[in-house]
Structure formats: structure tokens, C-alpha cells
Image (cartoon, helix red, strand yellow):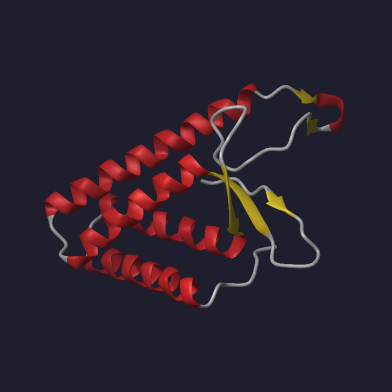
Length: 145
């Protein structure tokens, strides 16, 4: 769902350079998740679906942009540094610990399951994913390698 473009920093946790627009879309989705979890209803599930569709549109735009980057084909490299979720040549960057980004990804996957196939189990998985993410805000997870 989200690519992994880790910045390797040997003296500290690995962080990802993530486009601000993608992080903003994730934050909007998290707010919809919180509203849904506070009182699940069909209306709030529809709002969550809308937020997820907007996030997917942002990811699709990033994938389209990534496909336009001219690379050094023979070496299998691009000619510039890439940012997760970028949709243009000059992204605003947020540094996000890789473990936190992984938890965001898991949260979005759980939310998609709630809108695809609503059930008590899907709600419980979404609650667990959100609780794990909140716990990470207090005690950040180790970097994903």
C-alpha cells in the first residue's frame, strides 16, 4: 500500500521522509476512525469510507508521479531522492519514524476491513490497531528494517 523509502541514519532510529500531503490524508483518516470508534454507525462508516477513498486517491497520485520519474535504467536507480507519497517534484517533507509509519499502515488496513465487511471482529481489530498506534505515541516502536 505505502512504499518504503527509508533514510538510513546509523546513529539513530530510521525515519522515512513522507510527503506532508500524505501525512495530512492519514491524519484525516485517523480522525474519521476515532469518530467511528466513538460510536459506530452506518453514517460514520460512510464518512470513514470517504476518508479512505481520499487517502487512496492521494496514494494513486503518488504512484502516478512515481511512474513519471525518469531513472537511470541501466543501474536500476532514479536520478533523484524519493519521498514516500510525493505527488510532485518539490514535496514538503515530514520525517516519520519507520515503526510509526508501519502502525499507520496497519491502522488503514484495519479501517478498510471495517468498511468492506463490517463485523464485531473487524471493529475489534480496528480498535486494537488504533490502541497500538496511540501507545506508540507515548513509547515509539523500534524502526522497521
